[in-house]
Image 1 (cartoon, rainbow, N blue to C red):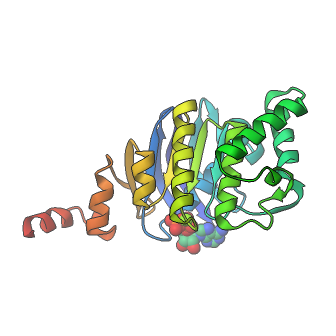
Image 2 (image 1 turned 60 degrees about the horizontal axis):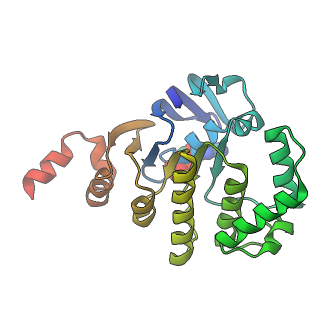
Length: 254
Ligand code: ADP
Ligand code: MG
């Protein structure tokens, strides 16, 4: 269970989030929507303790751990993993090297190279990525779509319990989007992980079927609803939700 309680977050001395409260139970998928610059990526970064974001008030608790005193590395050890809009490339470290190291850190055991290799190759096949990716530097020289699939490879190998998906659909063509979305769905069904999903993409919403949708505006969550809230957003836009009566007025006028 993730509990974000009355969080205030600053970036570059500017208050981006204030009184941001959100709870996500194990196995639930929550979508967070809001206009550009509302602070969606900021909450993702704050959750991972990105040093560019400062939490000045409130707290984040994940499975009884207060993230306040933890580093990004500690947080990933707890099983929280993010795929961002633009996964960065890391030169000089191959996928296989990183994954073996991360797995042995996670399990505290020596990783059998043959078992590792077999499992990694099976996942490559499942994700329609060439096995040669395993020996390439992380995301290096890969297209946007290939990077997302490469990050999926990391997910399937490292088995996080909490996934943060920050606009994973960006830069994906129709086929790649379906593959990525279906793979994420399969992963969630298999592992019962929790998901914080940032997207406005109807296909991704349809496949991942969030249990709740939240609207972020005015530095905090101003409305929570079920999947039908996405249709209302599509119809009315975000601004209307800041004015409590605007939607009702709209409906009366229809
Ligand atoms: P969203 O993901 O909802 O589009 P962001 O969280 O990226 O919004 O940004 C929210 C606001 O915070 C924007 O005004 C953005 O310019 C600002 N911001 C985000 N990150 C930083 C940063 N590292 N330094 C300065 N300003 C930032
Ligand atoms: Mg963003």
